[in-house]
Image 1 (cartoon, rainbow, N blue to C red):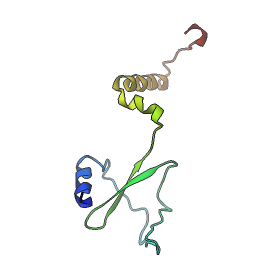
Image 2 (cartoon, rainbow, N blue to C red):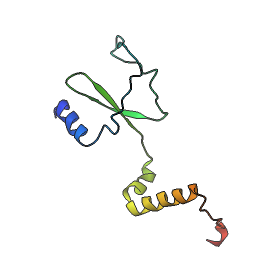
Image 3 (cartoon, one colour):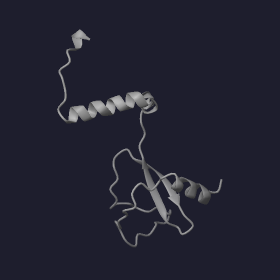
Image 4 (tube, rainbow, N blue to C red):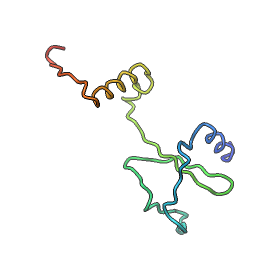
Length: 104
């Protein structure tokens, strides 16, 4: 597949989630191994990136995180996911009750 076409196809599916870009550094040059250091970029621990570029040479880094395979079922089960989200919202508003595990 043509990387440029893949880029535009991915962009059409919503890779850019927020158009509010800000400059975080200027005049950064790649080193001899063509690496660019992102020392001023806010990068969270455990994040990997999908890298996209266009014909103009602009580059977009799309942050990704992995989930354990044992937790994938929750993302595939919409009803379970909605229940968890509802429970988290209720807990954040103080709607909680004490559960005695021995009675379950």
